Image (cartoon, rainbow, N blue to C red; front, top):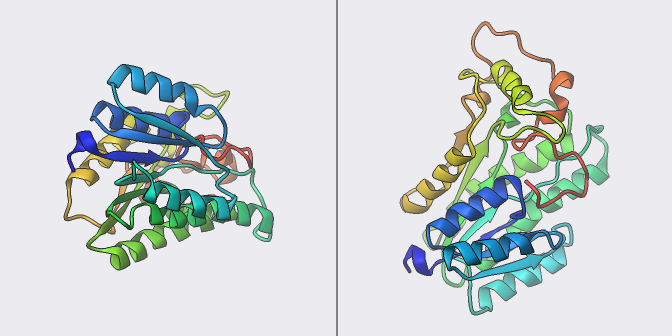
Length: 269
């Protein structure tokens, strides 16, 4: 199946990173299933269909409703337009919380692990490619949002376990972005200052580079089980000799998309 015939599913596609990845895939001829947990993706659906002449279908699901996601995955697999690429971008980024906050952990696990695991079923009949969005800062062990961190660590492990079990029919890879976009209420200068503190290159990552990593993984058909960091080296820690901000000083921007703090903003990364 050529790229022009391929259907891709992007979760959390209504804005920010998800919307950028959807636009990139549309520009490369992919037809799209766009997920959001509200009707926000309908505007993007109409725009991409009009601008690129592709077919686009909007889907609205709460990713914490595991049984609904299981049903949706099987409907996609057995429907007229099964995806051959699934991009698990949707995320929740909760307020800082205690390690025993089981509600935050349950929500994060549902969105970051259980939903991507369930959506694997959408690819199983025909095969394809899964790309999971992680977080470049997992190696820093901030412990500010342990539910979020644990769930993203679990998704990283799931990436490699699924890659091994599902090969050769399904490839599974991941992208771990660093600082990408200013948090709500902040500007580019704020983001640039954080990048100087947190990454050896001292600059934020670029959305274009995350999209390029996605396209690269799509084309490199011998790659599976790989995690690509797109973060200016942020996962390595700050530049040697630099004074690092404390975890609590940077708590509002530890997400790769820097700043979604509501427990219910899933699908908006």
